[in-house]
Image (cartoon, rainbow, N blue to C red):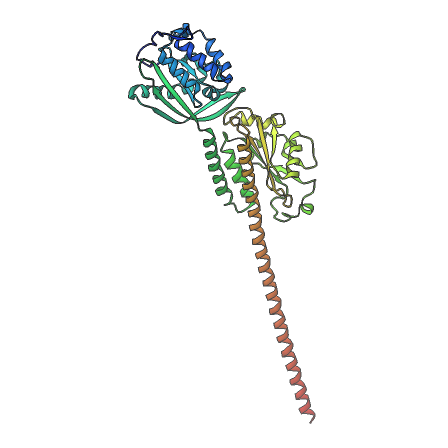
Length: 428
């Protein structure tokens, strides 16, 4: 991280040493001994600390570390909050276990090294440098809120949101103390609540199923970092509002579902993936579609079951990573309603599929099902009103015709009576 200068107050002073049970220990040796006794969970971590060639850094051998630095290190290691110290002219970083958990796969390779060598963090250097320089200039704590990072865990990158606070260590220490709060859970929750609100407001304004499908695909495909790809399969007779309840008579196992033309990658999708029947098992994902249809519940697709066309879409947008999971969402959540459509979403490769993610997907399915059901109910209500109005009009017309006929019959009867009277008079 070229250009980052900490201007240390002074180098760590040579330790005076402490006598313990007649044994002369340096302040750092005493601190490490105390930490070893604090709990076995620190043992492996401290092995990393003790295995570093500190004499090759500006901090020098551990036995030369000052009492102040040893005390600060001891306090940091016992702190349950993620912390690190950036020390010396060569910006050596030491951190505690909570911080190691945050940086994931970068531990232990980053421990005891200069932050300037953390090349995987190059994109974050300008922000880090800005915060450190402000802390050095103003001599107070400086915060960076909503600091987004993408860090690897078991080889897969995750998006995290951090609140970072940096303060300059007091003399004679030379460096800075960083405290980090992981706000990822709150960030994800707020982002998902906002998405659900947007979906609800947009989808409920649809006036037909075709309009709803178009809105869903347009809205979801516009969020490539949240959904790696978006596809929608609609029932071949989905535009007909009839047979929306009573699945036993309205939906057979031979029902066909067709890929909507607005689905991502439609033009390059193989024919065998454009249309499928519930009785068909030619593709692994179709089997999963059948499972989703049978259970009326979301079904997760693993990486090997995701068609290549959708993987290519995922790698061309958003985070440009291969998708690990996708989900199939049926448009109905109960077995008494016809499945009008299946929504297939590629899940974010930077987000773990955990309980929170499952809950979010269930809410997306609920909104989808509610939008479809409300729309069909509204259409059926309009149709029922139209049928009633038509029936009333027909009944009115029949009544008017009947009245007209009776009137004609009365006039005819009166005419006959008149003729009989005239005949009788002429006979007399």
